[in-house]
Image (cartoon, rainbow, N blue to C red; front, side):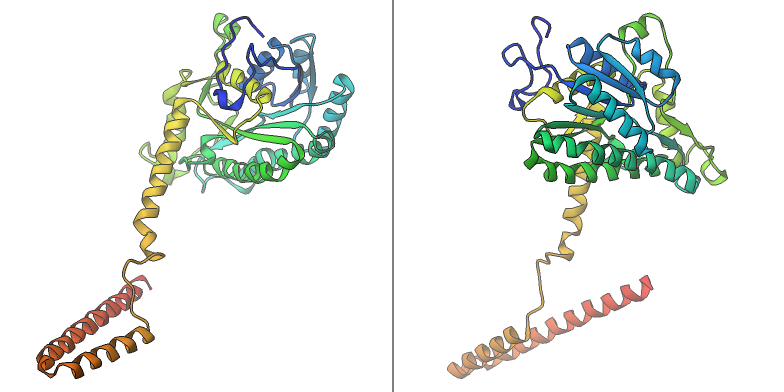
Length: 366
């Protein structure tokens, strides 16, 4: 750990520091050839950990082998369990153990929900959801037996707030959110912990890439689905995701290097959170969504917790007996009793009007 290192995570999580020295961990990082995965690999290696970097392209295996003497480069397809099993076996054979599983592998298509066909949608779910399930199911027995392990699973703000133009992709991330949150409760008794990392749009800012003026692909791991005629106008909400990325170009607000530093601390801290939002855009988007949800709940909660309710038959009977006793006690109040009856009549009429209004609404709806 560098002299003068200051952790990013709050002290309540007990992050690694000069006073809380971290031990060397062994990482298996899926999606290591993507810009986030590569930054995480680099940071873990710089901080003294051992890394098995897992990519998908066979050509990238040799490149990853050359990253560092403590880096093992492998390839697999997270959708194919056999290839995952081989990666896990080779990593354990190389390092003797596995401490941290980080998954950055992902795939998305920018396009309207209507324009994406079954193949487009299945490919996203197979990679983003079933791929993670494959990783979890193949590694969790080992972590349970050890009584220790960390999962760091990358999600997205698209998994908490729907983004036009990213419907199926967002659906996969919503699924990942529910999956990992449920998993967290299930595995905590075994000493295994899981964290969801939810970044906003992230830029590449590795020093060597900036010095070499390397321009990353504009769309990252996303493919573009050409819009059909109804969604082609520039004013179509389905164009939102495309315009957002095009507007940001290579000036995305969130740093991949900072995310990598925080992820390294996540693996070493004692009390990791369930969710870690990365980037001011992610924080503000999530806050806005939560406010909108709360406002909508408050506006419609009267359907479940009405402030005024109709009296039950027993209550009406008790009310009538009480009025009768009151009239017998004072004969001079006959006029007031008549007024009360008129009042009851007005109330009944009001109830009838409300009921009729409800019937009319039902007719209109039908």
